[in-house]
Image (cartoon, rainbow, N blue to C red):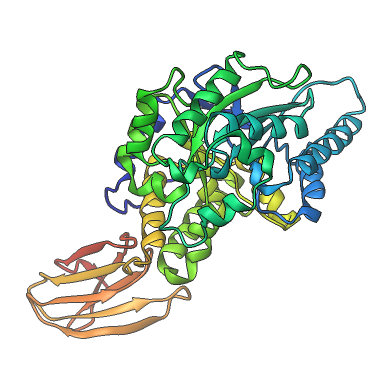
Length: 454
């Protein structure tokens, strides 16, 4: 089956595709993975549990680690106060996983990557050591690979939900005693945190004899000037950068810089930021559904898989196919399976044209500017008056314009695949035209000599 979707127009994806072309990553036949710059194999599809209700975490993780879904990457933060629950969920899930294989000694696919973060109240060298130590104590397991990020470079006065002084006052005394308040040194505290992460990662600082090593270190919610400043003062370039999905679409300078520095990019806010805004841009969302249906038809025709892919899965496939990891959060077991590494990894690849389409769709949904409906512009060059009809799926013809004079132009909104029929003035000759234009396109249809005799 040859899938050749119509082209929506060039977009920022043209720049972003550099990441796909050159980044050192792979998408396996089953589970999408990449390699971090330190050589660690890293899953591209994970589960965000940072803000998930505590009573749901163990169950979600246990289900997610099953052979049916194969989640092997979880995202949280020390400030979420759930690392101990995640540890329990992983141990329970892997126990069930081993039992399902009927081989408790089977070690294949048993490592779970957990990303956790240092909150901005713990910025600074000594405070960061405390945060990391507490995280490692709660996540201490031979089955868990821990990745440590700086959550924010600073507490910001312009963000309504951040209250620097109030949060500082609520800290335990031992944290206050470890170092100065980071909100009083916003330009340097995060650099000291990075120095601490480097020392811990390189083994220069021992936080405890029985604590695991850090698998990688990285940053989150940094802008480009902050990343450049950090790298100037660093001994290790961050292995990973976590950021809003908005950045991937609208900040190509950031994405290109990360590619040049071999910093893996991971996005959050895919569902809330893009998918849940579908009501604001119904035509763009319909275009996303068209791609999902095309991919479903391809899977059935080429691989015999009778499956209906969803719009959400197309978004996840788009990111992971371009070597960007995703961490969607859900409370639904159905969505947990739908968003899983097994589900996304088994999807057919998007064509380059489909990737370009998704880029335009995502931009439209983010901006809240919907697509224009496909337009057909009929130009009468038949040297006579013609009558224009629309042909429905039952073959019935409905008048659209019954007096199109020679040289006249008639514009109308339409849909891809619609069939129009033109008759000469005596209705003895006819000609059919099928619209190929898609959203945001205008297709010119020239009505020349009507050759088909009735």
